Structures are given as C-alpha cells and as structure tokens.
Amino acid sequence: MRNLLISTTILIFSFHSSIAQSLKVIGYPGDPYNLITKFKNDYFTVERNDGYAIINLEGKTITSGIKTPSIGFSRKLLIDYGTIFVEEGGKIVLKNIRGQALGTNKYIDALPFTTDNTVVRVPSPMGTWIVAYIDTLGREIVRFDVKKYISIVQPLSKSGGISFVSLSNFLPFSNGLTPIRSSLKDKYGFINKNLQLVIPVTFAKARPFSDGLAAVQNDDGNWGFIDLKGKLVIPYTYSREPSRFMSGLAAVKNKDGLKGYINKANEVVIPPRYEDATVFYKGYALVCEKYGTPALMIDSTGKVVTTFPKNLSYIDNATPPVGISGGDNPDYPFYVSETLKQLVDEGKGIFSYGMSYGLVDRYGKIILECKYNHLSNYHNSKMFAYKSSFINNSTKHEYGILKDDGEWAIQIVPSEF
Image 1 (spheres, helix red, strand yellow):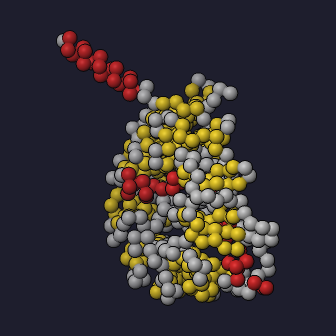
Image 2: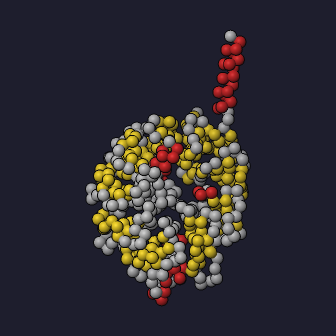
Image 3: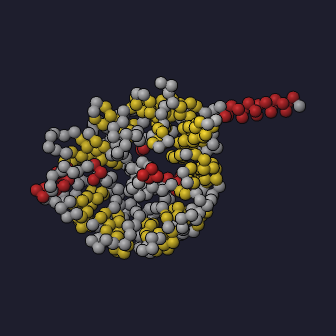
C-alpha cells in the first residue's frame, strides 16, 4: 500500500509538473487581426519596446533590438531560410538568425526570400538604379543597372525611363531562369543569370519555371508549357491558367472550372473533377470535389489516400492574397499548401473550420479540435497558436508556441510597461 501511495504521489506530481512546464516569454505577438509572430525551425519572433527579438524554444533570446525595414509591403520580421533583413543607419542589411551580417553590402530596398534567391536594390549614384540578385548567404548572383536590364528586350531610347520600375518586377530565378517583360511589346521572355535573353520575348504572359517547364500564354489567351530551351512542349490547349509542375504533374482547369492534372506529356492523368485542388508536393495533393464535401488527399495516380472529416478546409493561399483570409503570403507564385506540406513532412497538418483552426493527422484523425483562433507553421510537433476565451465576462487572449498535445510549450505574455 505504501509503495502504491508513493507511486500515485509521483504520478500526480509528474502530471502537475508537466502542466507547469510552459515557459513565459515577454513580448508582443500582434493583435487578433494582425499577428506578427513567425515560427520557423527552433525559433520564433516577438516585438518588444526596443524592436523585434528572436527567441529559441528554451525561451532564450538569440537576437534582440532588431529594427525592421518595410519588406514586401510588411514591416514584420520574416525568418525564412535562416535569414533576416534589418534596418541599420537608414540602410537594409541581411543577417542570420544570430544577428551576424551575411555579405558586406547594404541595400536601399529588398524583397523577402520566397526561394533560395531574391532581389535587392543597391545604393548607386543619382540617375542610376542598381539591382542585384543575392542568395541566402548574401552572395551576389548578378548585379546590373536597370537601364541595362531594360535594354535586353527593347531599345533604351524607347524604354520610357525607369520611373515605374519596382523590385516586384523581378521574380526570383528558378531552374536558372527568370521571366523578363518588354513594356514596349507587352510581351515576356526569359533571361539567365548572365542577363542573356535565352528565350525570346514572344509570350503574352509567362510564369516561372518549375520542374523544367514554364506556363506561357499566347496572344489568343490560351496556355501551354515551354521547356528550358523555349520549345513549346505542351501546346496552347488550356483556356484557364494552369498551375506550375510539381512532382511531374500540373493542375489544369476545364471550361466548367473543374481541376484535374496532366503530366509532362500532356496526358490527363487525373480527370478534371475537383472544384479545388492544390499543386502536388512529394507525390501528393489535396483536393475537394465540391465545396462542402470532405477534403481528400490523393496520390499521383488520383487514388484517394485519405478522406478528412467533413467541413474541414485545408490552408491553401496559392493565389495572390485578398483580404484577411489571404494573409501575408509573399510566396506566390512559389507557394505550396501549408496543410499539404505539413501532412507530408510532419504527418499532421493544420485545417480550418470556419474561422477556427485545429490539427489533423494524415489518416484523418483529429488531433486538436478546431477551437483556436489561429494556428500556423506546424513542425517538429509544435506550432504558433492564438486562442481567445470568454471567461467571467471578459475575454482572455493566449498566444505562444503550442505542442500538438494541446499544451503550451511557450506562452508569449505582454510587458507590464
């Protein structure tokens, strides 16, 4: 009996200890309508009186006092690809998570990393506009005067100046190429990292390369795909814009608005029957036959792998964001459904039910009910979470890093001052 009492006491103590394990970190995660905390790998961000801070999962401050420039229409501190853009002395500097400078350059403007390279504007003499592509270590891939860039596709004397050029005109390189537009012809082509025009400016629209192919539109408004040499390998068959190729498949939409998938030989592998469908990721995609029917995970043959509980929606901001539901999504057009990536890589993914969020495993089992106001960035059994509760005639707001058993690993609490 004595041993039983000791064991029971230990169990009770262990239970209460586990509840009390959550750490408290002082900071500001944003408000319910504008959450600013980002959670990547073993780090998350909060805002404090002296600027942003980066915290690890032990609650220790890695970097603090970070001043953020306006990057990609946002002053949020983005920590994708292990890098941060910070403001120092009126210029922008690329640093790693620990606050160490990457490269030696300072910039006037920059776009966030959405892949392994991005574009920045470099300080230059008056009357010039110098742009560079850099990688995630701050190394320059190519640097050029915008006048020279424009002259690649049209005579400089007819360019109309550079007053309307912005960094958003320069998409990252993918498969070694990036689209370029001639404003004179209102057509697109592709250049390589040496600023050589390798695919002529002949397309009404052009999307970045993926899996060795790029979607392009002709003057009749129809879409096809070209290869890296500019050869039309999939004819202008599609009246609606297709997705990019991932895992050897691309989503196409018929005239009824239903999506299916084709392979690189332009064979319909999965017939159009879905009102919504993501790009493929590592051989899987999320689809929905009709709005209001269960979300499905399918493999590259179209076989249903998982049927998820009815009325749950996966997170997919594959189109340019609109309003609150679109969120802060700089990844377009390189975006992959957040839920899909999580299900494939982590075995569980975030779903929504109306305006609430929960966690479901790849077999369709609900792990966390949809009772959270916000969940994002699920990985390594944790995610950023926000939950509000109405208790004793007042609303309680909770923010932090949540474990997938529903317990807080770290709670973000406001400063008293």
